[in-house]
Amino acid sequence: MPTLKEILRNIVPEQYIDLVPSSFDLIGSKAGQVAILALDERLTDYELEIAKAIQKIHKNVKAVVKRSESRKGEFRLYDYRLILGNDTEVLHKEYGYYLKLDPLKVYFSPRDAEDRIDIAKSTKPLERILYLFSGIAPYAVAIAKINHAISKIVCIEKNEVAHKYAVENVRLNKLEDKIVCINADVKDVIHEYLNFADRVLMTLPIGAWEYLELALAALKKEGGIVHFYHIGHEENLFEDALKIIKNVCEANSYSYQILKQKVVSDYSPRKYKVRIDFFSKRLK
Ligand SMILES: C[S@@+](CC[C@H](N)C(=O)[O-])C[C@H]1O[C@@H](n2cnc3c(N)ncnc32)[C@H](O)[C@@H]1O
Image (cartoon, rainbow, N blue to C red; front, side, top):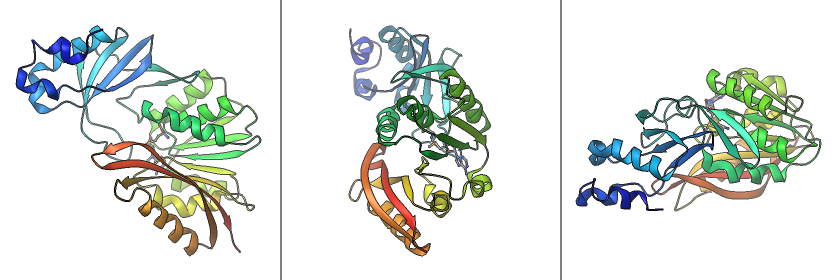
C-alpha cells in the first residue's frame, strides 16, 4: 500500500509535500472510522485531495476532520472542520471493548488506550473507584472489563454529551452493575464520596491539581491510590506534578508514597501528558 505522501506526490506541490502528515488519529472500527489530523495552513488548497487519499489507504474512513493544534475549554475539545463526510459518530474498538462517541463533541484519545490497560491491570478485586473527569468513561469500561471482581466505579463528568455516551458505553459493554455515571461538576458532588474510594482517577492534565485536596478526602480512611495527571516539560517531566502532590498532601496532613511515574502521550512540542500514581493516607 502506498503512503499518503506517495499518493499525493503529483497533487501537492513539491515544496509542500513534506508538510503532509505521516500520522493522524483514526477513531472507530470496521463499521466506520473518523480520521482526525492537524494540517499546515499551506495545505489548505489540497485538503480535499488529502482526505480522499486517506480514504484510499483506510477503507473504513467515513469522515475526515481537520483539527486545531491544541484542545480548548473546560470540555477539552479541539476546534474542528469537516473536510470529507458528515457522519462523525463512531463505535471505537479497543482491547475487546467498544466505546461509542462523536470525537467532535467529546474528548477522546485513542493514544490513551495503553494507559487505560496499565491502570486496569493495577486494580485489585473489590475496589471502589472514583473516576473524576470521566468523559465517555473509557477508563471505567477498561477497568471493569479486565477486573471482573471490581466492586464499583463512580464516574463524574460535566459535559452532558460525554455523559450520555458514558451511560451508553456502560450499557454496550454490559457493565451496569459495576459502573455508575454522574453528569455534574466534580466540585459539586465529590463531597458525597468522602471516605469512599480505594482509588481515584484524575484524568484532567490541565487543572486536576485544583481538585487534588478534594480527591484526597474521597479516599478511604485506610488510604488509597491517586492517579494524578499533569502536563510536564521535557526538561523536568515530573517535577511540577511532584511538587503539587507534596504541597497539597503536606498542607492537608496526608502521607504520600510515589508508586509510579509515567509519560502517557505527547502533548505539544517539548511537553508531555504525564501520570503519577501515589498512595496517600490521612495522618490525623
Ligand atoms: C481530558 S478529558 C478526559 C476524559 C476521559 N477521562 C478520557 O480519558 O477520555 C477531561 C474531561 O473532564 C471534563 N471536565 C472538565 N472539568 C470538569 C469538572 N469540573 N467536573 C466534571 N468534569 C469536568 C471534560 O468535559 C472532559 O470530558
